[in-house]
Length: 353
Image (tube, rainbow, N blue to C red; front, top):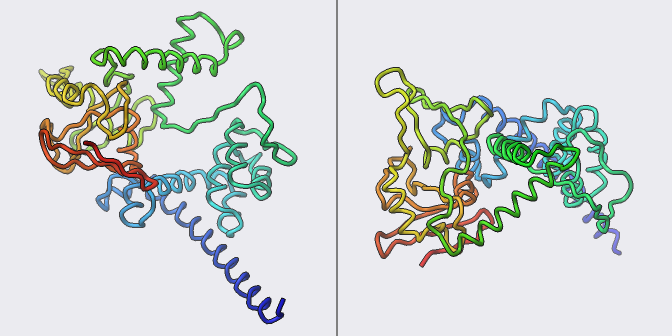
């Protein structure tokens, strides 16, 4: 190879490595600052609904990326080794995002060393098969290894985690079995089988499909300061947004109406929405008929009403995506000309009709 060409290539190579390290340092700063924006709820002072909303509009980040960077930034003060590696541009934030799911101050050094020797995909699989506080596996990764007992680790909203724990406890109470006889994982698999059977049954009786009353997550909402909290678990803006769309409201203010129960959307209107949608999710190409919610196409915070034309029947999975910022939904037309268009985070689009 020509020595001059090799010299130019090495020069560009070194500059690219320097630029990449600077890019990683910038991602570290994004994580720290988005975490500060999140914990202090500073986004509200600027007129944004959530850190993800702020990141999308102002920083032109994917909402999921903004949310994950904020979560990473919140964990970094407790993990100095990972924080230093990120700040120095030696570790990619996507690998750090995986490591902080399981690392503790005692195990973070081992996990960082593992992250530096395996691909991001391998690291993701190893983290998914690890418990919080465990050390990483040793030796070269073996993609063919698939143990008989599978470990599944999920990240979910705190309120959703309470639902899962309560469901497991309810099944234990009903079956009178302890963890020695049946693991939590076996009970979760049983619930999944039950859901599959119920889904098949609902194909022949759509009006009997469960809608709305999945589980009671108690939220305390102040009509003056507009702050919403939960006495049981930390709630995100996503959970609050879902509740504002379709929930029971109990007035606990002192006075003659104390204890009065209403729905966010009147029951008669809810039935009209579900009937119009033929008791299924209105997101194009979705066939889900279980756990349908009512969604306000124009948010109530932006002036949206309970008018029938502003409401849609959305399954709980897509409802979560909408309020999480990973699914954009637009409505055009009315009556027979009603059209719903969606765009997913990866750019996929779909249109009803």
